[in-house]
Amino acid sequence: MFEAIVQSTSIPVLEQVVRFSQARHTVLAGNLANLHTPGYRVRDISVEDFQTRLREAIEARRTSSAAPPRGAGSTAGLAENSPGLTENWPALTGILPETGKHAIPEKPGVPLAEVARQSQSIVYHDDSNIAAEQQITEMVKNQLQHNMAVALLASQFRLLQTAISERV
Amino acid sequence: MFSAIDISTSALVAQRIRMTAISGNLANLSTTHNEAGELAPYQKRHVVFETDESIGRGGAAGVRVASILVDDSPPRLKWDPGHPDAIREGPNAGYVAYPAIDMMTEFTDALAVARAYEANLGAIEVAKDLVQQTLRILI
Image (cartoon, rainbow over all chains, first blue to last red):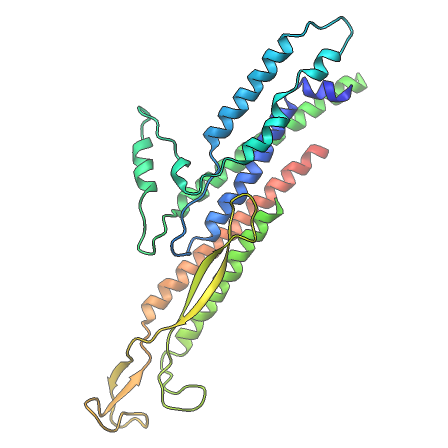
C-alpha cells in the first residue's frame, strides 16, 4: 500500500535522477583522473539520452495510470500503474559512449553548439582530448542537478510525513 | 558512489609519483656519477600514465603509472677542464657531462602536477558532497 503511495509521487523520477548523476560523477571523476594520460579520450554518460528515456518512462506511466478506472477508496490502480521507471533503469545505465562524441549533442540552430563541438575534437600533442575546465564545469553542473533532486526528494518525503502524521 | 572517490584517489597517487620523479630530476640536476660511483651523468625519469579500468564501474576509469622511462638523450656538455670529472680524451676533452635536464621544463611539469592534484581533490570534495546530500534525505 505504501509502495502505491510512493509510486504516485515524483519520488521514483527523482530517484533515477539521483542515481544517474551519481553514476555520471564517477565517469567525470575518471576523466579528471586521466588528465595526463596519453591517448585518453573523454568519456561521458549522455544527459540527453537519459532525459529522453526518463521522459518516455514518465509518459508511459502517465498513460497507463490513466487507463484503468480507479474505484472509490481503492488503491489497486495506483499499485499497477508504475511500470516504467524502475524497469527502465537497467537500460539507462547502458548509455555509455566510449568517446566524448555524445557529450555535446549536435543540434542545428543552437548557438555555441558548433563551437563547443569543434573544441571537443581538439586532440593535444599527447593524443588526448581532455579539457579540464570543461570537465570541472560538467562536474559542478552535475553536482547541482544531483543536489536539486535530493532537495526535492527530501521535500516529497516531508510532505508524506505531514500527510501521515496529519500535522503540519 | 565510493568508486568515484577511489578513481580520484588513484589520480592523486599517480600524480604524487610523478611529483617524486620531478623532484628526483631536479635534485640530480648536476649529478655526474651513478649509484655505483661510476662516471655517468644522471638520466632524467619520465612517469607514464595509463587508464586503469579495474577501479571504476560502468565505463569510468582510474589511472595508474604504466612505466617510468629513463631518458637516454645525450648529456649537456659544459666546458670545465679543471673539474675532476672532465672528459680526458676524444673530441669532447675538457668538457664535463651533466644530466640533460631542463630546469624550466621540470618546474612547468611540477605546476601541471600540482594543478591536476588540486582538480582531483576538488572531485573528491564533490563526491563527498553528493554522499552527504543523499544522507540528508534521512533527516
